Length: 116
Length: 114
Image (cartoon, rainbow over all chains, first blue to last red):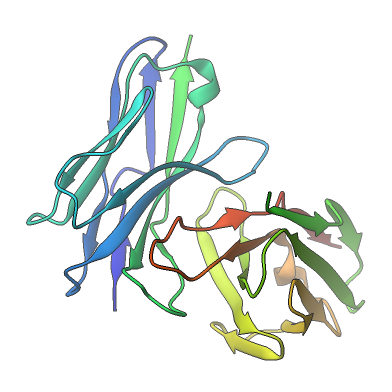
């Protein structure tokens, strides 16, 4: 079974600075997807970024980028130029490639606070 | 475009009362549907998922049940609520295909059992 580990329960960053959230996972699959979701105080879950394991290029979405290290099974999220609106819980998640009916596996989350 | 509706947004129920939370999806056919629960400040616990009408998989034995009476409708129920059922309940959907874009989540229901 796949597992996802987020070792940082809480983090904080000054506004305009850069912060990196860690995520490691365990799987025997060779092809899969990885995701980062953001849950702001409103508690709406929002997809931040998606990475396909068969692509070596790291995904980027504006100020959000990932460092995907397949051999190390690591998938960290970097937030550049942090903004107050980035304050949220961040969840890392894993899905098998063409998984059929297998649900996403989520980590326990990292609470990020952006400080003015 | 696809949308997901979840209601009610907030609910306060006494212990021992029944529960019915509803989730509907628009703009897609044969979605996979999911119910998650989240305790305050905690992670997501998968409760049920469904890959088709009448097909329900339960992940955690508990006081809750789920049903899927229509293709795009997913209902979470309880006959008698417990204090431990309090939490934030999220519905989500996904579709199968050559690519996966993860889940799209509803806005959630905050349930307080008193």
